[in-house]
Image (cartoon, rainbow, N blue to C red; front, side, top):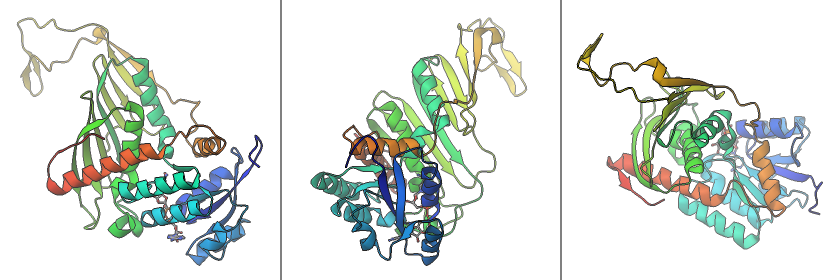
Amino acid sequence: MVGINKIYNLGIIGYGGMAGNHNRQLSQGNVRVRIKGVYDIDGERMQVAKEQGYIAYESKEALLSDPEIDIVLVATTNDSHKSLAIEALRAGKHVICEKPVTMSSEELVEIMDVAKECGRVFTVDQNRRFNRDFINVWRTIDSGVIGKPYVIESRVEGSRGMPEGWRTTKALGGGMMYDWGVHLIDQVMYMTKEKVTNIFCKMYYINYSEVEDNFRLTMTFESGLTAHIEISTNNFITHPRFYVLGTEGTMVVTDWDGTGKVVKKLCDDNTWGTEIKTVKAGPTKTMAPRDPSTVEVIELTEPKDVRDNLDPVYEQLVDAIEGKELLIKPEETLRVMKVMEAAFESAAKGIAINTEI
Ligand SMILES: NC(=O)c1ccc[n+]([C@@H]2O[C@H](COP(=O)([O-])OP(=O)(O)OC[C@H]3O[C@@H](n4cnc5c(N)ncnc54)[C@H](O)[C@@H]3O)[C@@H](O)[C@H]2O)c1
């Protein structure tokens, strides 16, 4: 019975690292979803589930035919998301799928059609929408303090390469575009709500030949705003997490915790005079440092009201099952898939792609 206190039973297909994270979060009991059982092709993962007190279903079909399972989490390698999500929907389950939702936009459209046909809710774990670094950037832009933003730079950088296994195998959906790019693209598209009109991407294969381990993507939006998204796994000196240029100021968010600063223009500093200033590298007029009294520095502190865990992801799913609008809509992830496809095309051809996404 769907009611205000209903607890929904979750069945998990693919009980690896990320499913373990879902388990840790759901075990805290903050949302009305409880894990009932799991299915994994790996016997060791089934043993782990049993030890945690869950049913280890002998087959995927056994999990899907359990009438007590309301929701299925698909947390397998990316190549199998489409078929598993469709099977679960056809079995009458609501579905939450790990990112990247599928390996192509066509695959996602197939899932969306089946979800509609079966009258079930389908959503994607785009959990990074709720992260404090991103929320601080969004709130600061929204406050108007930096004026109109015209460049958003968003980066995630590591130096330890990629874990061996499916993440380095193309056929299984490996590579950094699907792994991290999907999050950063989703964040910026969720925030701006604008159409993407142009995409240019350069991909690098530094330590792996099969899939990209670094990429640099430039997305241009309808208003002229550009987003530069960079993922690197071979970067020993990191940039700030976010760097945003606005007409009235500049924002930097240095790390995952959302801390950083805004430097805001108070008044113009155009007292050029006739003298050229000399810096260590030589004379300059345009690039000479400005008078500090013409700007204000505003510290950005860690937002304390943010829940950057999986609770909001499950809450919006439960709400949608109970009739409210989904927050993480498949139509939005479809746009992200299309951007990633254009990025792959751009990288393969070495050209910028005009789009209307
Ligand atoms: N949202 C996030 O922040 C986030 C973070 C990490 C991973 N992920 C996503 O979660 C998914 C899993 O990643 P992971 O890091 O947990 O990988 P993983 O390799 O640790 O786990 C995948 C599990 O799926 C199982 N599996 C594979 N195919 C299966 C099938 N057909 N049926 C049943 N079980 C199957 C494997 O045996 C393994 O236990 C990927 O889609 C990944 O992109 C999301």
